[in-house]
Image (cartoon, rainbow, N blue to C red; front, side, top):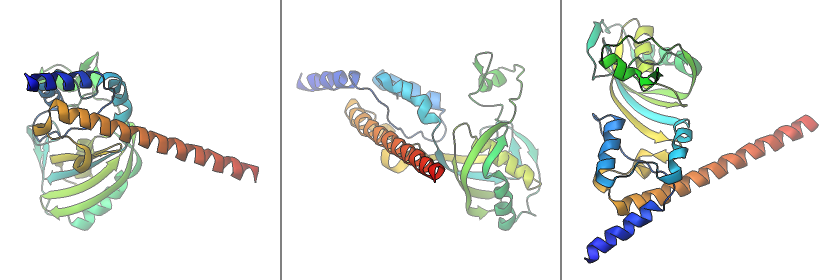
Length: 251
């Protein structure tokens, strides 16, 4: 009875929370799969209360990824889950070639999103429409920003990249375009998001074995405080920049 009362108390505390928290998504399941599993376990969503309204803003923040690409093979989904659509030689590609090609994808660039994506056509996700065999119009290239891009490892046909980018950027498109730039083809073999806004994988992402009401209450409180601190820091930085610009204009 005592344990049940404790669970009820924690559930009521969770109900009263407003915020969001980070979770670790394992390789394989989609984001929707992970969310459904979390709902099944807790009957709650990742963004809690007013925190759900914060998610869209969080997704537009800068992100960091570590990705392993594979040269010589292209797939219809641009990752290892898809069907191979093309094979080309990669023997001519050196690490210097890879690093040189990466320079063309840094900064403010135009990028075409993948057909298999969460972007929508007539209210339905492109990925769902493609799987159903429906006709899908490719989305036009759009502006994205890449803050940093570097080669962590090169062991042909595999290469590992560290990427820091803004919202709306697709690492799968980057690797696909990079393969073409190198006169070959490539797809994403592995992809890990290591940072989203102020959240880092090592420090803030809640592992599946810790998806309990108690741990989520702690995570929401901690992450919400982190978001508030980050927002205050950005506001201070913006105000400082505005003051500097005003002083420069006055001079």
